[in-house]
Image (cartoon, rainbow, N blue to C red; front, top):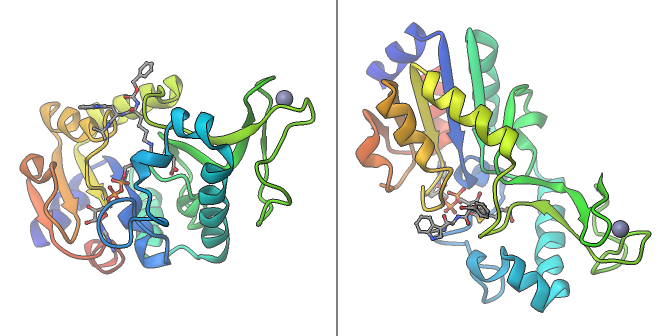
Length: 235
Ligand code: BJW
Ligand code: ZN
């Protein structure tokens, strides 16, 4: 912790990659591990274009359930500490795989959302996109004014990440002096690859996670514990 704190204090360019674990203490279930299942489905069964084509109602029921949990949740001390790191840093980018919007609600400004936003909906017919924060949605699956099905504005397996956001994330990772990896199993690419990119460009990599992950080998320091406990101590 002492070493990590020194690196963070001495750095002017900092980037962080967050995953579902950072929202776990807000009561939002993670995808993998204990509590990662919804009914009998794994995320790989639901977060795909094929699953949506096969059963849009099932996929929307999962999203509607998660939207309700997120709406009722509040940012936790981990989210707040990341917003504080941004206020203190010269340059800071918060690269998140999360779609819940809790980083913004905690006051983070520069948030690069690699996997989209659960509050956005997009028409599968005309492509129209809008924010819809009603919980629950009045009817499932929701439809666009044009009659086509709406889908969540998120990135599913096999879909490309938003190009502009990805380019900014790569730039932030390759320019960072310190790269924090927080609450992600690092099982999903290309997001997890950002930590290796940061390391190969010379960053000190600090991991915060109660469990060992595929990125632990890349980490210069691994802090084992909950982000809501450890991030406030780090700052
Ligand atoms: C705590 C904690 C506490 C708990 N404090 N920590 C083989 C090799 C490499 C890649 C591939 C491959 N085969 C296929 C691929 C590509 C694929 C992929 O990575 N698949 C893997 C399964 C292998 N990737 C893709 O398809 C991506 N797209 C792509 O590659 O496009 C290429 C392309 C180019 C051009 C044209 C077309 C395509 C897209 C990936 C999209 C992922 N989408 C999801 C759903 C988003 C929407 C939604 O939320 O519903 O993103 S899946 C899900 O996983 C979600 C998450 O963002 C993502 C990562 O999960 P995360 O955040 O790491 O959560 P968990 O649950 O896994 O881990 C939680 C962690 O927290 C754990 O470690 C806990 O210990 C920890 N924790 N409490 C701190 N209190
Ligand atoms: Zn439409």
